[in-house]
Amino acid sequence: MSKTNEGSAAPDSPAAARAAPGPASLAELFLVFSRLALHGFGGVLPWAQRVLVEERKWLDRDDFVELLAFGQLMPGPNVCNLALMAGDRWFGWRGALAALAGMLVFPAIVVMSIAIAYERFADVPWLQRAVTAMAAVAAGLLLATAVRLGQSWAARWRWLGFGIVAFVGIAVLRLPLAWVLAVVGPCAIGLAWIAERPAAQDTGRQQEQGRDRGREQDGGAGR
Image (cartoon, rainbow, N blue to C red; front, side):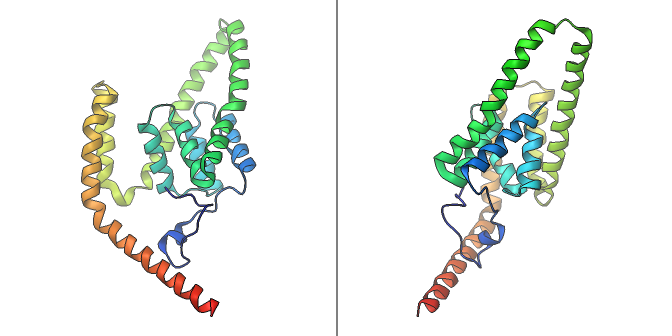
């Protein structure tokens, strides 16, 4: 994963065509991730996809799905892992810390306040019904996000089968998550490496040609 603010691709390369603008400063990065966390009642993931991909356009859907996949496989909350990797992409370790702080600082204050209030009023009937309704809304948001992200992989529909297998193993058969990942993960990675290798090699050659053209243009301008 490249850090977009620490280097630029050649103007004619495919990487340059896909380059996203990214945040302008660490402060903006912190504030945007704070906004994500504070809006994320019922789950931050739907808001993260909406803000980072659709509104800010800091990531395209493929990049978001890749970061989310890595975040899901690594220990810890997937959204916090995503914040660390996204911040590192734009500003290195400083960006990683800024994004993670944005995800945690203000939400921690809000959660502690709500927890104190809920402890006092947990037996109120209307509050219990409200919590149940919020759980249903959270499930709907996650489902909508999954469908939207799946649409971005329409051209790679054959790989969605691994997601279905993982869903059946965990949600239907109630198999341990570690077992499912240990079986499905290596199979998916191996088959993807075999199938996608020619395309990756073509992309690498095109990027190298773009860098060569960029160096030639820079040399001509220098003369």
